[in-house]
Each structure stands twice: as C-alpha cells, then as structure tokens.
Image (cartoon, protein in one colour):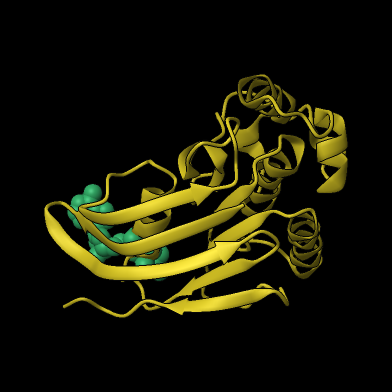
Length: 202
Ligand SMILES: Nc1ncnc2c1ncn2[C@@H]1O[C@H](COP(=O)(O)OP(=O)(O)OP(=O)(O)O)[C@@H](O)[C@H]1O
C-alpha cells in the first residue's frame, strides 16, 4: 500500500494555509510532519483523512483493494479531542467504536489491556485524566484495523511509560505493513520515518 500526496493545497476560513505540498509514504513507513504552530499540520491530516476538502492537488491511496479504496477509508484519525463521549464509560465508548469500525483485531478488554487501562473500563470517559483519555483513544487504533494511521500530536499528555508503550504499538503497526502520518513537535522513536517540515505560507 502507498499514500501519495501531490501538489496539495489547503485552506481554512477561505485563506490559503499551505500549497504545493508533496510526499509519499509506503507500507511499513512513517512521515513525521513538523513545523511551527499554525503552519497547517492538523489541517493536512484532516484533508488526507477526508475530513476537510483540499483546495488543490491530489491524494492517492494505492494497493488497498476494495476494502481501502481511498485514504479516508483506509485511515484511523487520532485528533486532539479523542472522539469519545464523556458521559459513556470507557467500555461503552470502545464497544461503540468496535461495532462501528469493524475489522476487529481484538476485544475491548484486550485493547484496554494493551494500554494498561483495563481496571478503569467502568469509569465514565469524562472522569479520566488527560493521559488516560489519550490512551483510550489509542486503544481504538489497536482494536480495529486500518492500514493508515493519521496521528495529531499522538503523545501529547502521555507519561514516559505510556509514550514508550505507544512507540511499541506504532512499531508493530509498521512491522505489519501499516503506514503512519503523524503531526508532532516531539520525536516519536520510529526508525523507519522521514520528516516533512512545513513552512509558513505567509
Ligand atoms: N475553522 C477555521 N477557520 C479559520 N481558520 C482556521 C480554522 N481552523 C484553523 N484555522 C487556522 O488554520 C491555521 C492552521 O491550523 P492547524 O491547526 O492546521 O495548525 P497546526 O500546524 O496543526 O498547529 P499546532 O502546531 O498549533 O497544532 C491556523 O492559523 C489556524 O488558526
């Protein structure tokens, strides 16, 4: 599988944020998107995931067959807000995502075990600390398969131990032929990665 981004432009609120951006990433590899605050890293991830329209250029996802016909279908998107309902328990949130996403790799309990949160599965998501919330969102990635992981500041709020565990999970994903595009201000500890430095458009 391969993701190719060619001459991509993105805008927010009618204003051009970046233009002529091109890169490719293949199976087993990661792209780390870096650059100053506001340069458009999150915007880029959201455009690749099909959550925002591009204003120009092309995004091609090849080799995914009928199951993954485009980048949006092939992607898990881990954004800043974690995509969980605060009033539902951790277990209820992940059970919803498991039935919604399909492509099961493991059960809810096994996913929570992987991020070390099985003991708080009964708590409402809204009670959790910042780092615990992030770890529940990471459990979603390992519970249901998607070849392309789009990660927005994935280690934000994680303690050292959780960060190391997440690096291990990203390595496993890459070793299984997965792809990662991550916006980050911090190194993620991945060997098979290239950096895409975004620079201000204005
Ligand atoms: N809905 C919106 N309307 C107008 N401008 C927006 C909107 N959303 C974001 N922006 C602007 O788009 C620009 C790019 O934002 P984006 O979140 O992609 O940056 P980023 O590189 O991810 O920043 P950071 O490193 O702070 O996370 C910023 O200047 C932001 O203020």
